[in-house]
Amino acid sequence: MIKIEIGGYNIFFSKKVLNDIKNYKQDTKEKNESGGILLGQVLNQNIYVLKYSDPCKSDKSTRYSFERDKKNAQKIINREFTDSNGKTIYLGEWHTHPEKSPTPSNQDLKMIKEQFRKNKLNEKFLILFILGTQNFYIAIYNGKEIISKKLPLI
Image 1 (spheres, one colour):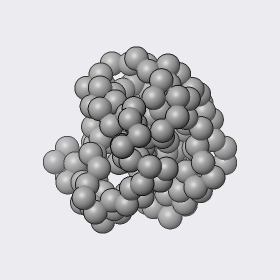
Image 2 (tube, rainbow, N blue to C red; image 1 turned 90 degrees about the horizontal axis):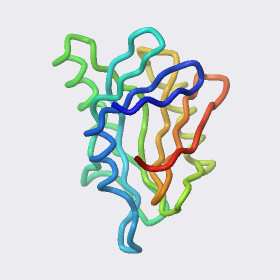
Image 3 (tube, rainbow, N blue to C red; image 1 turned 120 degrees about the horizontal axis):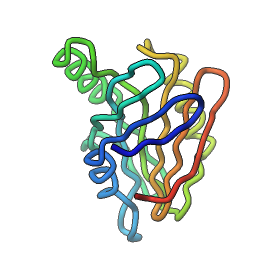
Image 4 (cartoon, rainbow, N blue to C red; image 1 turned 45 degrees about the horizontal axis):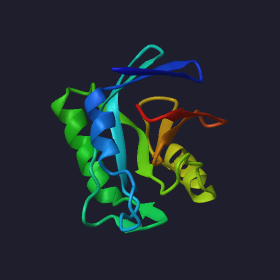
């Protein structure tokens, strides 16, 4: 597990999740943005990111944009929640950027705020994770503010 302290929370990423997401890094000009959802469990102030979704064929993706298929993501969320007896929940979003040290676009910030506002959530936050070619951006949105960090790829 990799521990990241942010916004009063300890976020623990399984090494498998981070390593699998790194496979989508836009390290060539031919690779479009990729993304999906983050899933896991929360115990007090500890967030455990244990699973993620791969991009699917119905996502919309270009070199500089990504929009995931909401229906497909909801099916994954429902299945994981049911299979875990309500323990594994939707924690947030991940996607890639074709830059060394990613910065969220206005669209990225709008998306995470809309997800928070429009969806029925199990927790009072959402995670936004953006993978760059050398660093990653991670943020917690609590409905009022976005608290973020940039860290080198591990």
